[in-house]
Length: 225
Image 1: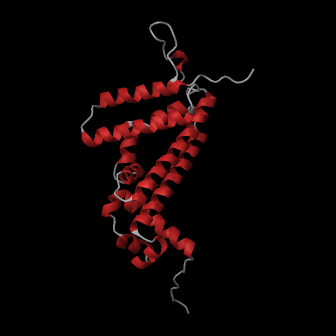
Image 2 (image 1 turned 90 degrees about the vertical axis):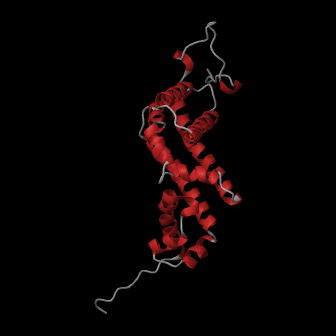
Image 3 (image 1 turned 60 degrees about the vertical axis):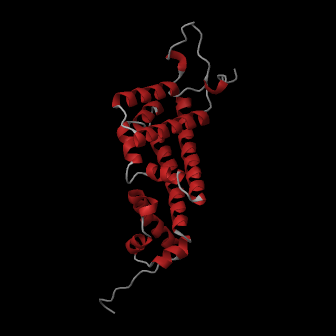
């Protein structure tokens, strides 16, 4: 009949995806505790019971959001790595204060990851640990690319460097959460971290003239001759 509007009926997978897509900015903007399922349902055009039918509980939906965001982070890191000729310079931009403030501020995925790590709910904490591990794997792939191109030191396993990098990001977030830190001091921390990630050949030698020991007690690997 002319003029009659027909509402498209989504299949189960499409509806679940629509709910998940709508939930991500809600949780990112207001946090887990303050996000209302009713608001997410309204954005999608469904009822609250439909959301619970797809994800079980509010925590189940948040876990799905964390999993999706960690997957997106890995894809993002891979994409920007493919278009970068210098991984060390790329990391410098990613670790810049302005960029980190956006990631860990309202609307940033870093804020969700941090909230998950401190959650009272075991399922959310577990998802937070999984998200961190997946994020590190994305960073590790980026670091391995840098090791191949020569911009990242290769005398330390990339996984060790990846966790070092993530731990420094968490430390920065901790400092900002509990005190007002100096921009000059933060810049010095960043330069120190980047210097640690770069190849040590020209990074200076110990005053005795000996090359400092490699991190983690690992020896430099040379390709077979």
